[in-house]
Amino acid sequence: MKRLLRGVGLVVLMSVTALIAGTVVPRPPWTDSRSPDAAPKREILLLSNAIHTDIAIPVDPDLLLRFGFLSAGGLAIDQPGVRYLVFGWGGRAFYIETPEWSQLKPLPVLKALTVDRSVMHIERAGGIDRAHPAVTPLAMDNAGYQRLLQFIEASFAKQGDMPVAIPGAAYGQNDIFYEANGRFNALLGCNTWTSAALRQAGLATGWWNPLPATLSVSLALHNDLPDR
Image (tube, rainbow, N blue to C red):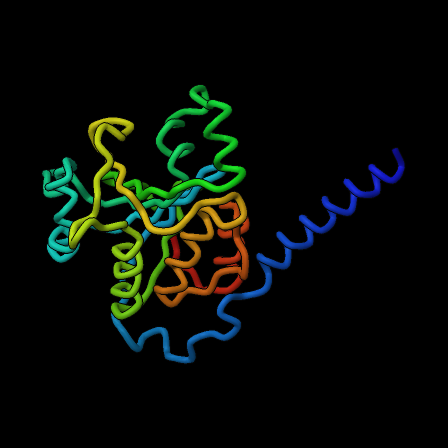
């Protein structure tokens, strides 16, 4: 029994150490030396809950054109009142089959803890309160913004030249699921995808951020975040 307890304690200690190191060690390990006023700023929003993060991007004509395939797939994005497109990546079974905690099922949880296919989730949204505790405004230059969009676009799996919508997969009238590139697992999941996307935009994150809390802390540690 003592050996078992020591083993459990060692695993817990290693896990906590990895989470702390993954938060405080920056990735990339250097920062951009350009003046913060050297280029125009673009702002996006990081949306967080207890286990998942999304990226909300303000709608403009270029964004609507770039992701116009969403309308063809069944989510009209050029509607009055649409202010943001919200993008997230995650495990197929858990993401699609668990819109609410009350709908949690054993099989999607098992797949999330092992390996699963991945999906993109896109939601159209109206105004989002920048001051809400679950919202983190993030600024970048235009080049970083374009790299972010390229990263998001490349996350969609395609058949020919077109991303593949998943028929009947949605939480309601304002969202849609698409097939995605990459495999999901608990160690390299939705929040590490978000971290990678933000690094493409020129932001520094922690080296490994599997949780929304560690990602938020690492962004605050390694970047000058906009005022709310």
